[in-house]
Length: 251
Image 1 (cartoon, rainbow, N blue to C red):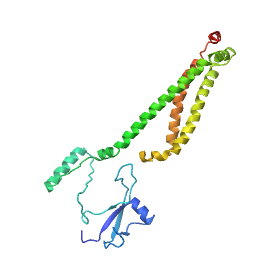
Image 2: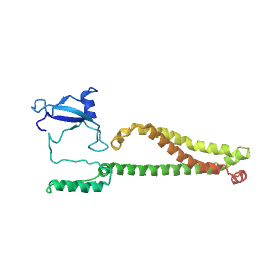
Image 3: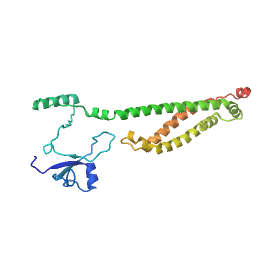
Image 4: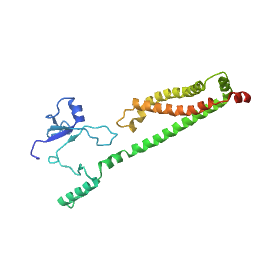
């Protein structure tokens, strides 16, 4: 096959970048510098993009040259199996040994292991940041509960007077919850704006997700609102149970 005209396959990224939508099959490439005397290589096919340098790295233009036309050492083989990968690895070792017992397979691993290893650092950072986020959410809930509980205690006489004058417990509940949620809503708006402003710092931790992802922002704000609402509900419920006589007597 070395006597045949050199051919190659290119990935979709290369076809888009250098041929800009035109039909790439049949076009020719030349590797090296313009003044080099290397042969022109004809494109005979386009293959789907594959990430070679990590899940978080963008796909680069790539070419695939037939092994019979351009051998290389060392070589990487990829094998697909529908059965047990470990059994396939053992079978591959035996097949190579039968061809040449002096050739050894090195760095053999399954695709899932390769992906898991490439994402190890990112997974650790994500878990660490998620842990900090959960702690921050709990601290926010505790802070909201503590402040509102203190406010309800300080306003027990006022709440008692309101109940004595005919205020409905439901109205008091809604009033206390609304007062507690106002700073939460204001803080959420400021936090979302600040998060959108510093998304450039998070680009290195993301892949397959845009830094400004509306569903993520909405879910985060909803989670914070739900936790804050639960923290507001307990002091508000206690406000509805204030005994007007006891509150007035304590003044």
